[in-house]
Length: 293
Ligand code: GLN
Image 1 (cartoon, rainbow, N blue to C red):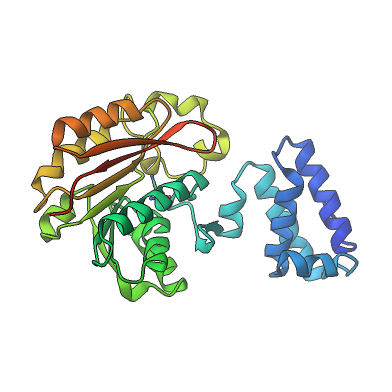
Image 2 (image 1 turned 90 degrees about the vertical axis):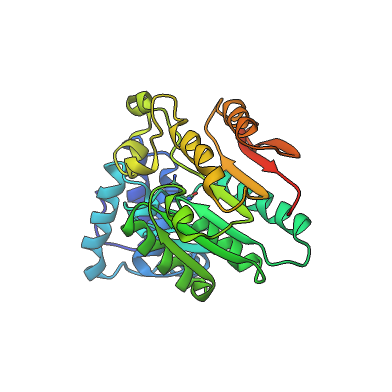
């Protein structure tokens, strides 16, 4: 375990310790944790390598490295994850936003601007977690109206804080409740509905990486026997909204895109249902489009 010395020595020692414990990307993790400990940027860290690690920080450093060695995601230890170029606070109450979801945001921004060239569409994010989706969209499209829901009050609290932090708090409305229920009750009519719901099949629990299985909230991960329960319920609820949204964008798990597209096709008339692959070539997003009313 790391002992006092220079910042560089503490870092080198910790990163080889983490690597020996089987931690993936041990060096990158140790660097992020050192930045977190010192409260400095990556560049600043480069200039501080030869400084002594302040004695009062040595103990905290050991604790951070211990948490990482136990398998905790580095984002929960630092409390931070970047998404779409913006900083987000994360805790065990919310899923860590993933880079694939940035592609969903991109697709929705693109379709929304195309279909509502001068309008102010209402975008709804269902199951917002950290608020990654509505915050980045509100930030990128100042004219859009944005609202987001979650069943978890703790997640909504975190999402609100993230909106505040990124200067869009006044632009986002928050709803608490299960899937489309709060939307149906509020009478809001979203033009664009987006969701990255829990979609891991329940039976996959044992095969998940411990980082995910032991630390991320299970309510944000699991979606029933085939992982499709939340899509099924949301799609069944669509006709109860004041009108079917012009754009529906879902993130889906491996081999789920075809089933989700079929459920959507069954539930409403669409001009087009598009399946978008992620950078790994996996069918990751299902985008259903209608003509604006
Ligand atoms: N919408 C959030 C995200 O994409 C949370 C998703 C979830 O918890 N399933 O990061």
